[in-house]
Length: 535
Image (cartoon, rainbow, N blue to C red; front, side, top):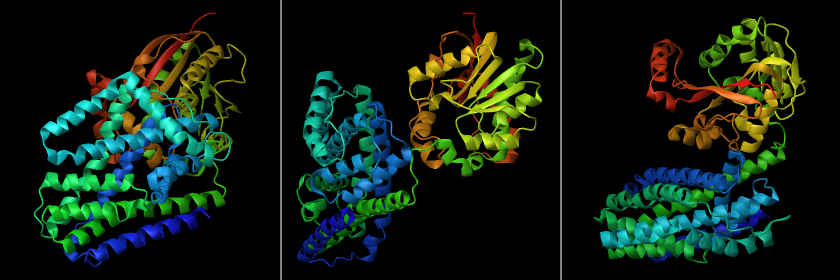
């Protein structure tokens, strides 16, 4: 029923669009010169969707709604299939309905959607005034700075929830309240605003090659302004996808700039097809993919690492995996002699046993623990010596107190549900280590902003081992924990995982040199070492 209604609305919009162009005296198919520039517009549209998805996830995270990246991406792209529904109502409902949400998350998702639309309007408004001169642009930017004032932001948030809340409560199945006017903060809005400008800039700029190749010498700022105004006009209309509104507005603007009516209509047809209608088509493809996934029962309520077990070994190239295992186990092995002969160790989140196997070879008596039954089964095959393997979690370790001389967690704590829970997990790990023993915490470092951007928004999509809901630890904020005293923090690893095997020995000395200098703060991983103190 959803797809049928969507197809009907889209069909009405498409017929209205074609009628508008034909009535303007143009054939729907643009000439080859204009079609040659269409791939540029298509690339700009895909760029626009990608940056807007990053902005969407960023707003969700900052407003306290951490959604798994892959389902969120499916819901985000799928919502563009409902772009023909006026005033973004279809998109809003799709964002809420296409991804599993807890009741408390619904108002945060609604608020993030409202901020997202408001920032898009703001960015397009700036581009729409580009041709009016620097004074007007400066006034617009100055007026935008009012968002840095807390009461203004909170007032806008209340307006957003007031406008969007009733629609969600009316159309969403299950409990969904309108929510509260959470303040995302000035820094969050500033970064989201920058992403908005970055997303919409290429889209409004790519009208220029279409017009120029059609033989009309339009000024750059005039063309950008015309494109931005047409998008705003279409978004504000009650016509599906702004058909006959956005297109007519852009045709009229191009004619005022000197384009022939036929040329203007042909250019606009190509532009709209490569932007708005391409977005709808990509949304339809995403909807079909989501439907196929649900029909095959690929739910997201099982253990994540059980779900990715089949492709887990392909996550890292074997030569880089061996390099990383060596780098992470070497500092642990170096401290083993101080813990006695054949010290007892606990590998929490042991996975396939890569790290535990190295520790066993170094003389430690290891025990492995993991939530995933499939990971534990793989560890039994991988570890060369017999080793106890237990299913459990870091928050409730099934071991007596003081049972081990040392324990370590490697890329595990960021999967724990929240920062307070991470602290509880660290205290629980300390409980099973005897006084004087050591706890090693290996984590990915997010001090480097570019690496953090990649880790939080790109890595879950291209790799799949992370879900996008993680709380990454910062090496600068590692402190003592209950029963544990922090004794060392060091950052390491710069070599990316795509480096070919022959280059690894050549780059390793450079990596060590970077780790020894000030650049170490920007490394990809860090190790925090704790000593268990007597209660």
